[in-house]
Amino acid sequence: MWDKDRGSEVVGVPLTADAFLAWGNGCNGSQLGWLRDGDDPDQWPVIAWSDGAPSWRLYRCGMAVFLRRLMLAELDENPLCDSTLWGNVEPFVHWREQQRRYFAGLHPVTGEPDPYADMYPADPSQFVE
Image (cartoon, rainbow, N blue to C red; front, side, top):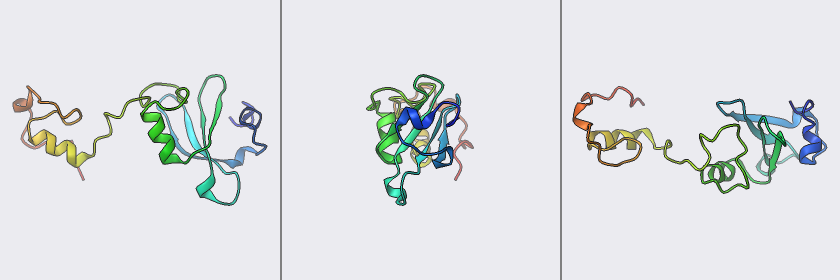
């Protein structure tokens, strides 16, 4: 994809396709990774590919900062092919917190009172270690 979509031209970094080190992908084909630009992995920027124009986007930050900005919609635009993660932090509740909420009669994701809590089984097998 790097060569086909002229990645080095789009992001302005004259590196070959092997400089892309993938660490994630989206449900609609988006690819996320580091651009191995230099010898220090802590300095590698994040690069994203999606089926759009431009296909490649470079983000001069680390993975954790990128993901936080993605989930808080703090980037200029959504770099992925879908909006599942864009501005959406709700699905990322630790399983132990989900379990605590479940047994407290709360919705496992939102933490709001769940009017259907008494209809669920006493042993939520969805919560596994």
